[in-house]
Amino acid sequence: MSSSIPDAIVLPVFQKEFSPVPEQFKREVDPSVLWKSTRAKTEKALEKRIFHQDGPTLALVAVGKEGSNENARREAARKAIATGVKAARDAGARSIGVVSHNILTHDAAVASKLAAFKFTLKTKDVEPPLAIECLSEPPQEESGLDWKTGSLYAEGQNMARELMELPGNLMTPTVFCKRATQVLKGLPNVTVHVRDEAWAAEKEMRSFLSVTAGTAEPAKFLEIHYNGAPGSNSRPLGLVGKGITFDTGGISIKPSANMKLMRGDMGGAATVVSVLTTIAKLQLPINVVMVAPLAENMPGSKATKPGDVIVAMNGKTIEVDNTDAEGRLVLADALTYISREYKPHTLIDVATLTGAMEVALGNVFSGVFSTSDELWASLQSAGEAEYDRFWRMPLDEDFGPQIYRSNADLCNTGGKPGGSCTAALFLKAFVEGIESENGAEPLVKWAHIDIAGTMDTTREGPYQNAGMTGRAVRGLVEYARQLAKSS
Image 1 (cartoon, rainbow, N blue to C red):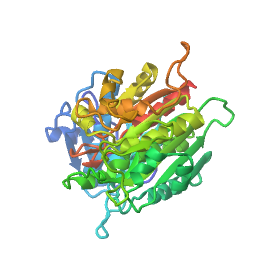
Image 2 (image 1 turned 180 degrees about the horizontal axis):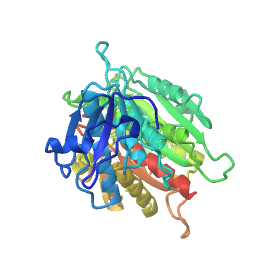
Image 3 (image 1 turned 45 degrees about the horizontal axis):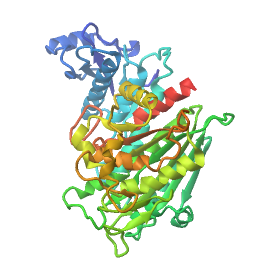
Image 4 (image 1 turned 180 degrees about the vertical axis):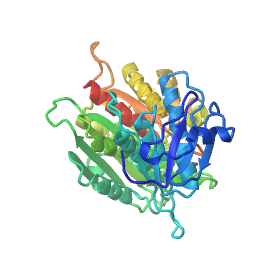
């Protein structure tokens, strides 16, 4: 709890009570009287009123009707806090105090820091960042979540948002690796390896390198280790992120309309590096290995052509039917590498993989394909807690004929029907250790998360501006936190 005087105070308004103003900021007229004098409705979610007075400006926001469950109530509170922060900022406040009465301070911090995020490359009239603090006495929260954890969760998501917003000329594979190295510098138990194309060639990552053949921009293979449980003999959690820093589609070139959004095609890599960074800052007692194959997909003179057949790291042959289905090609070798070299107990890959996922789930849910019911249940629980939600999709061999129709072992496209499902089934062929042998549990629990739909949004929300979203950072960080608690 701070003793400084903020420019504005955000007060959530509940149906049955008003949040108390901290003693040092109380004035003659109670906020409840001010609220009622404007005929504001407490039951109307996100109804807000701004009151300028002697001292900090008051931003009152209605939380609205209580949700049907705890997660819904938490999300309603987040939206109210975020709405108040934006209202205070728009009223000219540069320092804001948040009262988190009846709200997890973790959620108040998440909402505040996400709402305050602004991406700009302008050189004039740039607003300084908001200073936001909690004015409530920190309660003893048994969950282990507090203002600090919420701030770190939000900072992680904002990190991914910024990485994804940067245009392709400012976010090349080389720049991505430099940014990640700078952010992680000085964090304990973290080791960063930036691999080049020669290293990838030595590892026989021909599928990955086939994507970068058409560009002059060098590809990189980023590998990061977090050793938060150095005395543990347990295998690590594995994370893989697709890192196409700009995707033209290659020879199968995309339409020019909205192609600039393909600066965000490295959203999977941005997500997993932000997740690992947050895990390290939280100092979770788990071990994590993260890899991100980073490349541009360009239609140069040496680019892979439709119909070419390549041999992946695991020896499988792949017919490249469409060079715009490049994400699965870079992920194929990355999945083989991490599952073979480190044998993680759980392996999660994140990718802006298929337009079909946006058609199926819009930008509400990230699609999950998993070989493990247990892993899916854990991801679902974590996603619901942070309202960074997931939806399980079918991972079924009956989709197989669509990608086994080639003269090669696999075809990198399966046609329009079930496009996200065929892509996930393609990736499954490159994860080692997910098959049960002699009735034993599989060595690896695997989940593929397709964030093509949740990568960006055109809708303005209380804590999510139109643009790149940074999902599913919070859901995955919460998954890792719950994993650490149960270990």
